[in-house]
Length: 197
Ligand SMILES: Nc1ncnc2c1ncn2[C@@H]1O[C@H](COP(=O)(O)OP(=O)(O)OP(=O)(O)O)[C@@H](O)[C@H]1O
Image 1 (cartoon, protein in one colour):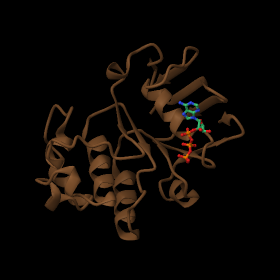
Image 2: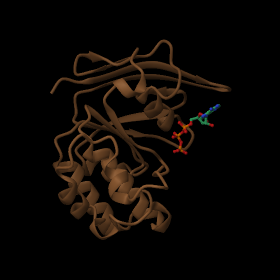
Image 3: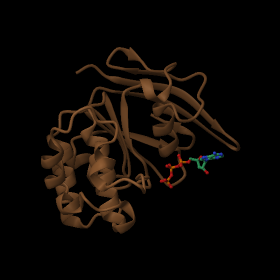
């Protein structure tokens, strides 16, 4: 598997972060204190914030100048951001070309019995698992996960870590728990003092 490289200066009012990441690992974990710039890094990769000097290369494909919808990424945001008017099932299948794999994924994340509910009828941790399922079902080149284990109890978190370990897809994720990266056999990127590398 060839790698992911991200070089960018992310500038917001009163905040600047220099990102210089090169990772050949299937899973890369951004780790650092609150407010360090982990979420901004994911959003820059997704193309959701302007980053004029960014150079983002994924397995030889330069994403930098592409609009978000052409980067072929999937993302689970820090808050689940589910569509309130769609069932859980339709939220997960949103933007998926095929429905294959939904049953297995729902089983692994223990959300099978929630598929016909609306997001308003989910707990925080349930919504988080639905958001994770949505990001993982879509056949994207890179999956961005912003603190995907927030609100999960220990056994659900174990199941999610096992699932992520078994998938073959490339993942760039944020986690506060240093133990997660070790369990995921991930490359760790430290984000602090205005630098992510
Ligand atoms: N639109 C914005 N304008 C100005 N500053 C911003 C903006 N968005 C984020 N920031 C600042 O950028 C910094 C990094 O924010 P970011 O959300 O990336 O942190 P984080 O590392 O993900 O933190 P946490 O672990 O708390 O989620 C913070 O200091 C935040 O206040």
